[in-house]
Length: 135
Image (cartoon, rainbow, N blue to C red; front, side, top):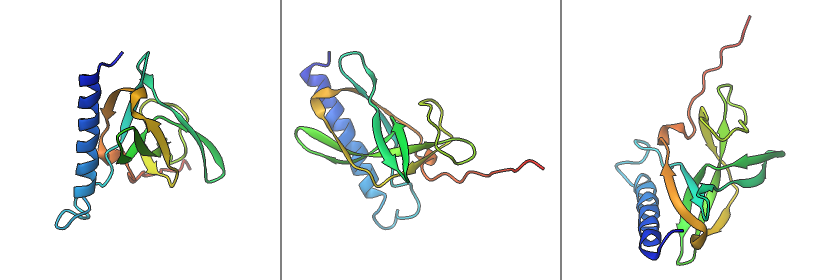
C-alpha cells in the first residue's frame, strides 16, 4: 500500500509530466518536441497496470498507455493512447508497442487508486511506421 508521502511524490511527478507537456507547446519549443509523454499507471493494491476499455474508430480497444490531461486534488484526467503494431494497426498486447496514437477519449482515475507511474519514450507517439509490402 502506498503511504501519504509516496502518494504526494506520485502527484508531484504527474504534475511535472503535465507541465513538461504544456511547455512543449510554447514558442520556441513548438514543433521541436513531442507534446505527449506516454505513461503507464499502476494501481493499488497489487501494483498492476491500469487498463481502460473504450471504443475508437468503431473498434473495441483496451490500453494501459495514457497521456495526462489534468490533475485535480482527487483525480487525474487522462487520454488513452492507442497501441500500434509494426503495421500501424491496433495492437491488443500490453507489451512493446511499435507506436502510440492519441485518441479523443477522456477518462478520469481517482488518485487514491494509484501506486506507481512509468514514463515511456515520447517518440512512440504518432511515430511514422514504414510498411513494407511483400511481393
